[in-house]
Amino acid sequence: MTLGIVAATLAAVFLGATLQRLSGTGVGLVVAPVLALLMGPALGVFMANATTMLSGTIIMLAVLRDVDWRRYLIFLPAGILGAIPAALLVRALSAAWLNIVIGLVVLAALALTFGTPRVPHIRSPWLAAAGGAAGAFLNTSAGVAAPGMVIYAKFARWSQRSFAATMQPTFATFGALSVGSKLAVGAMTIDQLPPWWLFPVIFAAVGLGIIAGGKLAKLVTAEAARRLAITLAGAGAAVALVRGLVMLS
Image (tube, rainbow, N blue to C red; front, side, top):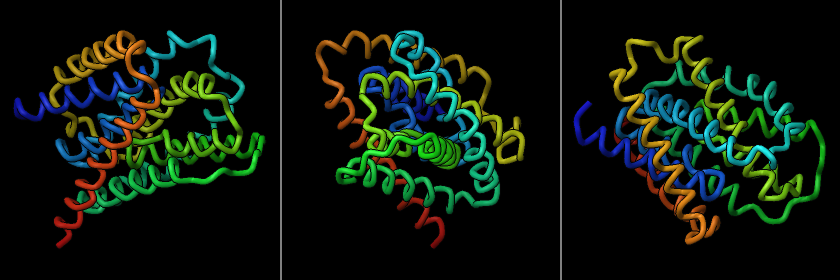
C-alpha cells in the first residue's frame, strides 16, 4: 500500500462523499471504479462497499425527516436476495473478468439511468422489490447501487427530495449486505484486507467530504454535482474495462 495509492484513495473517497452530500449519490459511482483500479477489483469494490456503509449512515442523520421508511423496508429483504448471488459471482470470477464486469456494469448502468426515455408510471411493491434486488446485486458486484434505484424511482415518479434521503439508509444497508455476503461466501477474506490504519483514515475522509458537501450546498447545485459524479464514474469504468481486456489478452 504505497503513499500514492493511499493519497488517491482518500481523494476519491473525499470527492465521492462530497458529491453524495450534494446530490444523494456519488460514493459508489466515484469510489468503486477508482479503488478497483488502485487496489484490484475485488478489494476495491469491497472497500467502496465499506465506505458506502459509513457515508450513508452519516448523511441519513441529516435527512431523517424525508426518509420513506415504507419503501426502505421493501428494499431491505430484496437486497439480501440480490447481494448473495452477486457475492458468489465475485468469488468465481478472475481479476481480469471482475475489471470487465465493473467497467461494463457501471457504463451500462449510467447509460440506462440517464439515457432512459420517459417510462410508464408504475407504483407497485413488487417493482420496488425488484429495484432493491437489482441495486444490491449491482452494489455487491460493482459497487454501484444508485443506477438500479434511479430507474425504479423513474417508474414510481418518486420525488428527488424523498428519494435522495431514502437512498442514504438504503446505501448503508446495501453496503453492509455486500460486505457481509462476500465475507460469508469467501469472496473476500480477512487476510486480503489492507492495513487496519487505512480504515479510520478513510472514515475521516468520508466525514470531511460530507462536511465539505454541506458547505458547498449553497454554491453547487445537485444537478451539477450529479453531472460531475457521472463523468468521473464513466471515466473510471472505461479505464477498468480496458484494463480487464488487456489482462485477458
